[in-house]
Length: 380
Image (cartoon, rainbow, N blue to C red; front, side):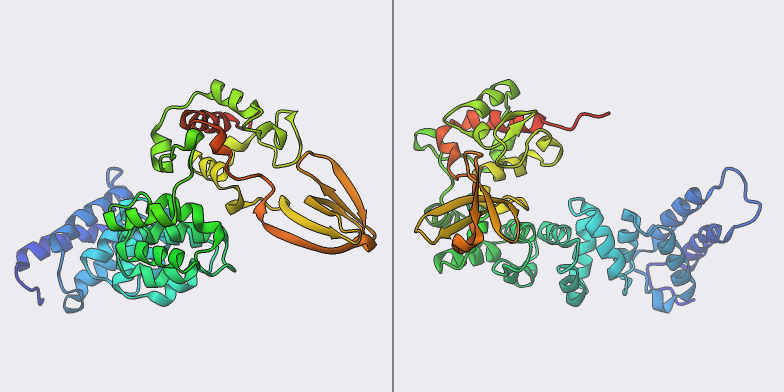
């Protein structure tokens, strides 16, 4: 057999002998189960890293058998990498989507990028797992993801959650952070991404970008005009749930004026009784600090203009052929005849006012999020 140096024939024969365990099917000893055979085979193959599979058909056959058995595991990714196996990008992508924050998933995505399988990635960015794909791409920290992802920032036909993740991913790379700043300078950065971009760009490691971001996209301010720390730092702070419950009911914070928790409060915005089961703390901070960026379906605000010059603003809670019912921020529902409506426009801003954190200290905000995170569905 044509084994390139430093693979001596005796070593390869010993390895192939170990790999023959893969072909054992009948009356195998109790001690040699399938997982054990696979583990032995992987260990044997580790001694052949870098071998030219095309020049060694027997080894290639053994490798492909093991590859089939370990699909969906970190060992699959390692074998594809170590033996430079082509045409495995779909399986690598599947693994990366399942493990976007693990080293194995990120390595799988790096292999796809190295193979220049851009069409596969482009298609996946339009699919149901787009957020996970963007997350894994961002974790590679490779420059080539910027031209792939940056166009999605301004594509408002894409789901806002996907575009937020794009901002987080490309902000990790200097070229991407610069591209986001350029959009902000040119006033082309979409409004629903302003907060995410501000949070990410004010926390980058490049001094020039960070200074410019602090001017163009300043972080929100807490009580007494004190700038809030980035969300990553807020997540590290210890909160007090009991104090957070008190902040929730405060007149100045106003949370209870629009939300209900276990029957208390006003039924205007989403019920928060189980919000801790639905959102993590990072998402709770974002929803509190930037309410317009992720408006829940059914809670979009509408501006209504009437023939007599009056206006109504709130949520459309019901609509018939003749009548429109609008719930205001007070929770009061008013009904209008459609013949009296001149114009109605869905607003891009949330009915929940922005800037609520200005009525709180940083610790108040941390306590409030701790409280919201504790509101979880009770198991039956």
